Image 1 (cartoon, each protein chain N blue to C red):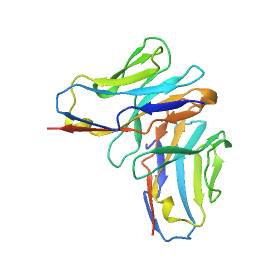
Image 2: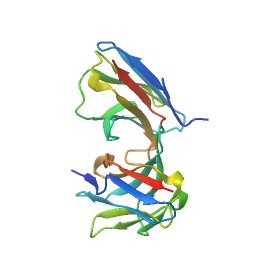
Image 3: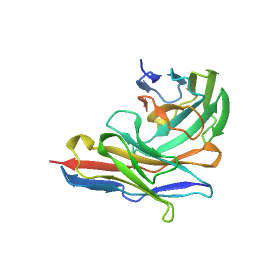
Length: 112
Length: 112
């Protein structure tokens, strides 16, 4: 079985500050890892994904994430956030038989 | 040129009624999904189809019945609606199982 744990349910941060959203996963097989963003009243859209290769993955809107196999983590980071980054962020893993599992989400609130 | 579309966007109905939500994707993907997102933003997989065949059927009441007439469509029919069915339902598609998922805009179902 595979699982995803997003360690912070809510992350408030001031504009232009750095942010890290934490994600740990467990799986008995090799996995693909994803971060999705959901803006208010919209569906989810892909921010970035790790399939293989370089462990540092860059995505849209200045976000990046680092795959750490020994710590089974895939934390999302941005060096300087904007008000427009306020949204719900979901970490997801797919592995066993191609089944995807989503975390419970982290609400990022950027304050002026 | 919407990639994944859902109709209707809003659905308000009485307890006990039967309703359907339609989903279409024009991406040529082989796999389609239905998710339920509750008021706390938790996202739960309900069903997944691959080439019109059911491959994932999570613990969902049998009042919920998916139907895939072709690869591009995955509809969700709900019988005898209950208050607890109120949620946002998302359709998604991916090229293959475990790949990046593309989400529709969601259908907000309210059961009175």
